[in-house]
Amino acid sequence: MSRSIASKHPMPVAKRWSTILQGCNLPEIEKADPVSRWLVISRACVISMTVTSGLIGLLFALEDGAINWFFAFLSVVGLIAAHLSNNLINDWTDVKMGVDTVDYPRAQYSTHPIFGGLTTSGGLLKGAGILLAVDAVIMVGLGLLRGWPVFAFAFSGLALSMLYTVLLKRFALGELTAMIVWGPMMVGGTAYVSSGAVDLPVLIASLPYGLIVASVLIGKHMDKREADVSAGVRTLPVLLGNRRSAVLLKAASIVFFLLIGFLVVMKITGPYILVSLLSLMRLVKAWKVWGRPRPDAPPDKWTVWPLWYVGWAMYFNRQAGSFLILGLLLNVVVPKLVNLVL
View 1 (cartoon, rainbow, N blue to C red):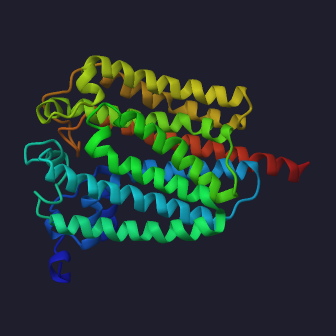
View 2 (tube, rainbow, N blue to C red):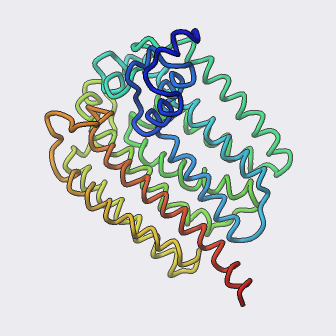
């Protein structure tokens, strides 16, 4: 896109990017700069979950001892590239398989890369190819320096991401896959790359956040249930119905807090992760919404309509994940400060 066209967008560049990352959309996207367009195309608004998983893994490793900060940084960059490439491949696959249409929710809650004229099928594949190439370079480098587990984590993640759209999501395994990927695989993988070791307690400690990432997917599939029934996609909400799925969504959120308590009681990590309990107030708000039917029209400034339940799941996820990171950081910093004072 030419500089003259991009310059006509009414928002400053930084405001465009923050708007997209917060709400997945940008008004007058056709006038935006290439970076803004690709942030929308790649659905970068959900990358906060991947960054959170990476930071959790880094902090678990740091709590146990020294880490290699450069390796940790590369690991998080690799996770982001993998997530974005997976989003592009999923959109390409869903279009080719006839799941995504102009009437399907994917083309309604955000500008669709192809149907919205932002790029082409070839453009999606090129973008995914570039991101996968970045991932490959990072994987090989870290694998040579850290050992074979890097390749095991990377190829396992690639396999699950490739199978997600064509198989796992279609047979009610997408939610479980999300918990495994954003939990043990991302958290455990980053912990290993950062420190050179990963043990069972870290993998167990990864489950709370993996669970509330899975809850985001439950909410999304609740929103898409009718369309998925028509498309023959058998997600959990398709099998259970939205009422039972809402119960499952609530249960997953409660289990998140129970697992946080378990980690502290079993001394798998320090007590400061209990700061995560501060996100209970946000859960209360989301809880009320999950128990009611979706409204007929979106409230003001709701940017991802017709998605509804997933928006509230993400609303809770972002704060719970942020407090979990804060708690893990306090687990690292407070003992060091106490030692300095004493």
